[in-house]
Length: 106
Image 1 (cartoon, one colour):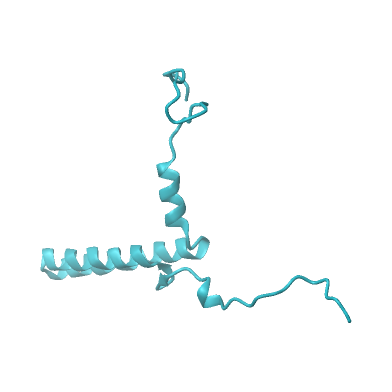
Image 2: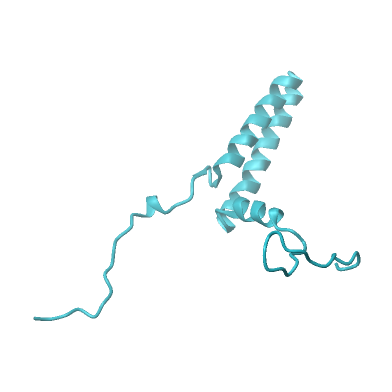
């Protein structure tokens, strides 16, 4: 009777752990860029409007591909960063009173 001292390994398929991307960029941002460029092309309704919308789309996809290559979850990290407050007062509970924040704190 032999005992294995190794921990149990479970194989997880890479497609189950991969972030959703389209054209190498974040899925929602690429789709929003396509929507903006199509609406720009239809609203201007001229040849230079179509050229402008195609150039916007190519530029946006290039930037989003670069973001996706750096960090596929960069959009989620940025949105969480924006939700953080600048100052969290030290207090024991939600309804407890605390001192006022100085105006020149930051």
